[in-house]
Amino acid sequence: MLSERMKNIMSLPTPCYVIDEKALVDNLKILRYVEKQTDCNVLLAQKAFSAYHVYPLISEYISGTTSSGIFEAQLAYEEMGNKQIHVYSPAYKDEDFDRLLEICDHIVFNSFSQWKHFRSKALKHSEVEFGLRINPEYSEIETDIYNPCFKNSRLGITIGNFEENELEGISGLHFHTMCEQGSDTLERTLKVVEEKFGKYFYKLKWLNFGGGHHITRPDYDVEKLIQCINYIKNKYDLEVYIEPGEAVALNAGYLVTSVLDIINNNMDIAIVDTSAACHMPDVLEMPYRPLIIDSDEPDVLPFTYRLGAPTCLAGDVIGDYSFEKPLNIGDKLIFTDMSIYSMVKNNTFNGMPLPSIYLLKSNGNTELLKQFGYKDFKRRL
Ligand SMILES: *Cc1c(COP(=O)(O)O)cnc(C)c1O
Image (cartoon, rainbow, N blue to C red; front, side):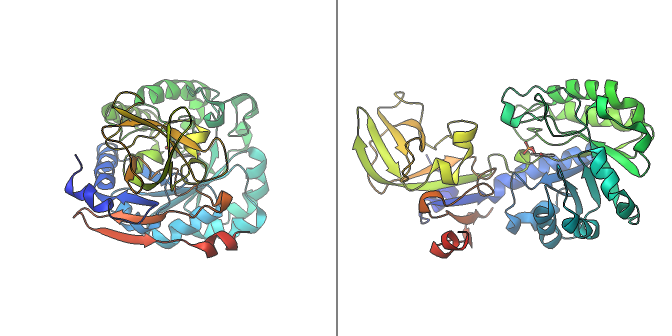
């Protein structure tokens, strides 16, 4: 049964994303606890979640943001208030770099050649700290597209390419080798990072553990994360940064859709007003099957349907689900965990409208944050 809060979102026009403020705050409290127990800095990786309307709320709990480039850095600068702004990019452009120096506290380079290219300019800014991304050549990610340590990866400097004589002006190292993983993976990764790069730590100010920490998942071992951070801090006298994306808004959002038609081709098929390709691209990219409230795996409950999008892409199928009652045209369905890697990745392929964005406030009221229309589709082409 839906709670009163959730009933409120069933009356919204579809398709829409709904950010769940209460769930977001629950996550932020866990992240703040990690900061408090370790004196580390937790940064929102904006690539996962950039709904800047809630940045002021996020800024009450954690130290700042990290960015993948000039646009995310600028967004943080405009919307996150007086908080830390970090940036890492596989390569910076000359025309962006001056602005990055103005608005960022930390700039992380992907290679020694980028560092040398920007070094003279960089070192004129003593208020900015500079770091290098390393590739420890150790990760536990099975899917290559999400594995920064796969063969011939462009992300980070391997120990074989590490130029230890070029570290003057560098105050920290950064690694990012995890994806939706536990603190046990972090513990094993740190061991390798330490073995390979530990000898440089004594001269540095900080170490950034990257993202991919699934800190707010119920079975995540937060105490082990705290131990890992404190171990590095104490042994090397380093400040520690972590930059989770997913964990900030994990399970803190929904995508609400309506059933447009029901057809049959050897099974019942419901066409809904949302698209995997356009509104939840990770469903096809990962791939994975998102959950729907009050549904189950196919053939568990009496009525099973395949859910498909109103696009022309044959594979734009969200998944197969079973329900207690038959679906009817006009019924609404709620996909869960739709705040992360959804709004930031959506697109208007096939002329699909973009879902509006609502906030489900802690008091149960809903607020429209953004609405899109035909002009948003046209303007991008
Ligand atoms: C993607 C990314 C993150 C965030 O990763 P999550 O899996 O969303 O926690 C953090 N840092 C860097 C460098 C990234 O590329």
